[in-house]
Image 1 (cartoon, rainbow, N blue to C red):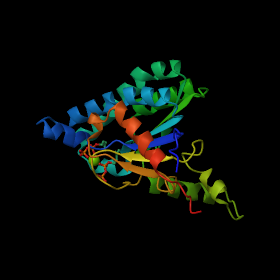
Image 2: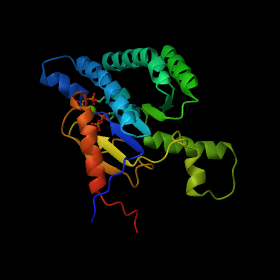
Image 3: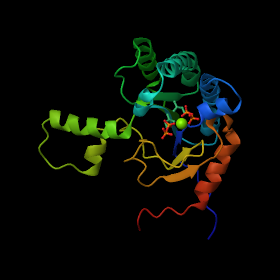
Image 4: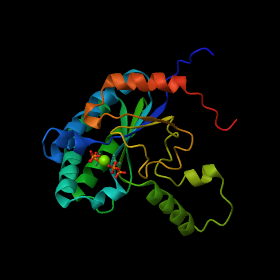
Length: 230
Ligand code: IPE
Ligand code: IPE
Ligand code: MG
């Protein structure tokens, strides 16, 4: 069979291993988050350059509230700073920013920055950067069901109708889900949307993930045969 040479349209990444990256070096976990956030930009720019159309990043899960308030606050401050500092650059590069997840309990300053970055970039068509922050797939599905109940829809829904209530409604399903950090689980990420995604795992921690690894992902993707049940 001849080797395919296609570029996945949408890659979703579970950016795991920041804490262990730091601990391995005798550093505070916060240093791993710092390194992890610094590693987003080069990979997003590279993804756009090679023709990927959308990257979704899992940055904070609904279960990450179980961490210490020190770590949570550090992540919130860091994420707010990065959104503020990088929005203009991303806008210039025709990147649309979308937030996936709930704004419930997020700091006001962060909500404001998220809204402004979404508004500033809303007309960009070249590339979408979806940031899953305070996101959980079960939460998303439950919210969809509750919206349907509130809307008093009484007719039967198709899968497409149901998906239209998801936070991901303007995104295609991910062709590939990558997880760094060695764990082989989804941890409540895009459970519905990844039904037919190719899953690719890296042992390396997220701060060590390089643009070259995206090339490996593309190669691996092209080696997989996607049947969709047929
Ligand atoms: C991923 O890295 C970032 C978040 C979940 C916020 P971790 O913080 O989970 O790092 P490890 O898995 O403990 O190494
Ligand atoms: C998944 O990583 C969430 C993010 C990367 C944001 P976790 O570190 O929270 O996942 P578990 O707890 O190991 O399953
Ligand atoms: Mg982890």
